[in-house]
Amino acid sequence: MALLQLLKEPSVLFAFSFLIVLLNFIFRDKLRKTKIKLPPSPPKLPIIGNLHQLGNSPHLSLWSLAEKFGPLIYLQLGHIPTVVVSSAKLAKEVLKTHDLALSSRPQIFSAKHLFYNCTDVAFSPYGAYWRHIRKICILELLSAKRVQSFSHVRVEEVARLAHRVAESYPGTTNLSKLLGLYANDILCRVAFGRDFSGGGEYDHHGFQKMLEEYQELLGGFSIGDFFPSMEFLHTLTGMKSRLQETFGRFDKLFDQMITEHQNPKREKQEHKDLVDVLLDIQKKDSADMPLTMDNVKAIILDMFAAGTDTTFITLDWGMTELLMNPKVLEKAQAEVRGVVGERRVVLESDLHQLDYMKAVIKEIYRLHPAAPVLLPRESMEDVNIDGYDIPAKTRIFVNAWAIGRDPESWENPEMFEPERFIGSTIDFKGQDFELIPFGAGRRGCPAITFSTASIELALAQLLHSFDWELPAGTTAKDLDLAEAFGITMHRIANLIVVAKPRFS
Image (tube, rainbow, N blue to C red; front, side):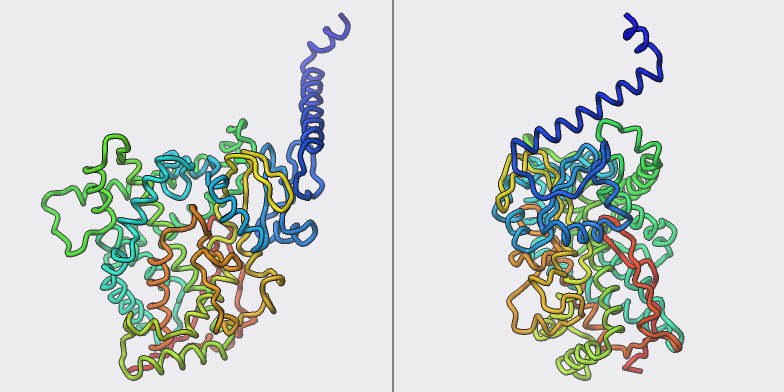
């Protein structure tokens, strides 16, 4: 009776409940470890597990843990059992050997809010719906034929980029901003049939802010995502209100675009844009797997955000590395100018001859993958990797950033040396696991061809048309290389340069 009376006291009841939860957590974890062989794990704290070890740059924290505990580690992130992979050999196990079993996605809170309940290609869980929309993306939206049909857009936008750069000479150029405009203009013309920069709509809509919020919100390491039963944490951290605001801005933009496309008086385009294609598919789609308008908007958001990000980040880091490595810049320029000659415009037909420039791009992907930690996977069944048991419903992160700097795979991994790819068969299309900026397997990015085409032509034209240097009084050591961590990772500081036009 005395014990029951004591338990009626609120403070005692709370302490007793907390003790029960704590003991359950500890003993459940110990019991689990005796039954299965989990990968090595750093020490953890009660309740939060290893969350405190992630830091502000999770890709760096996870890399540091991998150096201590090995390339396959087990973390308890709040309530979420997690495995982190940091080597090419083990990435192959995850992305190829056990690809099907590990092909689902965890239901991340931010993705559910931004992507219309995860009905896009990137975050949709594995199943019939995901297979259906991925097929649409591969065969209809991002096929080689479709990408080639937008060749005129790339040519025109590269010319506009070069014109914008030339306008600022002899002053300095905010190259990061112009590269962001270029990436966004290409994507908007391909997806929506028009650009937003000409009449100042880019700034009016706040595209840059929208994209930065998108990158940060979808980073995959939000505290609330590791305690699914405690959804109120998203409100306390301000995450929910930020998601609602960002979602509202994207949704309003997509509604505007869809309304424009459904207008019968709209001028017909020579080539259908991606919204046209999706709306046609929606009309014709079979009754057993129809696309709703929200599904269409979720897929558009995939294209809009991911398509802009990868192009911009790769070009921005590429020009940064070239300015920090003048001998590489000189060699890449000599190659492009040797192929193109005195012709002012680089043609897409020139690109297959630019082996060294393509090696430069591979080196950018190796050191600066746009998504440093690939989108998380979730195991659908128990699997065994490298002798360790990975239970079903485990979240799996592949640290592409760490793999690109693994001394087991790369000589002088911290050095920017495109020469390492000359004569090498290693590519970034998902077959060589030392270099996986776009992922691999079933969940690999379907937009590799689109992204590569936009990057190669722009970089070649910039190398051909301008002589580059840093502003007077600035050296490579002065450049701020800090990055903002998110689903993709861009440099925080803008790249300010002097670009002297080669052709007057």
